Image 1 (cartoon, rainbow, N blue to C red):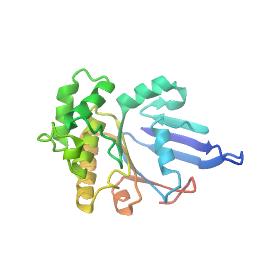
Image 2 (cartoon, rainbow, N blue to C red; image 1 turned 90 degrees about the vertical axis):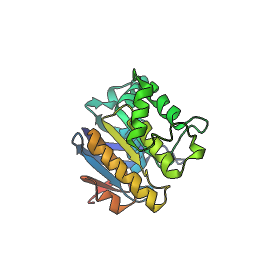
Image 3 (spheres, one colour; image 1 turned 45 degrees about the vertical axis):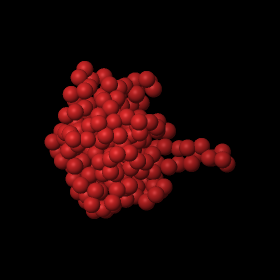
Image 4 (cartoon, helix red, strand yellow; image 1 turned 180 degrees about the vertical axis):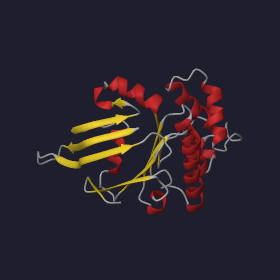
Length: 221
């Protein structure tokens, strides 16, 4: 479950007055449900996702993810929480270029503290259809395959929450469709909560819940 209560986020500005990027955000997302966060550039979507991930602290309000109040955690505790509770998929793949597909996933499994990182990593790559690409470097893979490696890395610890920031934004239409369907299938199969930041109304319409932001405020989707 994800719960936000009266969430507000300010950033400092050159004139000394706080720049408010999010204001009065309330949300209750049940466990295993899906949510689209929509809005134009600069509306606060990525900031909100960063707060859900514990990468940003809100100025005001409460953030609860998977039963944990993030405001009560130290930075060290937040890092441990992210490793075991959250999976991330970004528009940019953020793969280690000199490591194979399997090694990229194994590193994530080790960070999450899994006792069996190698078999779990092989299983995750098989889930995304890359069991025959384990030893390939990112430079030897297509864009769609690189994003599949990134998805395998995100799910290897079977996190209860999957956060996706424009995961198909850098892909051609054919690969974008395949990757999006893969994310939906994994969300259903693994029972994760799925939060998707997107500019695409067609993708947003496939989510169970929708939250639209404009100038940092919630508006009707």
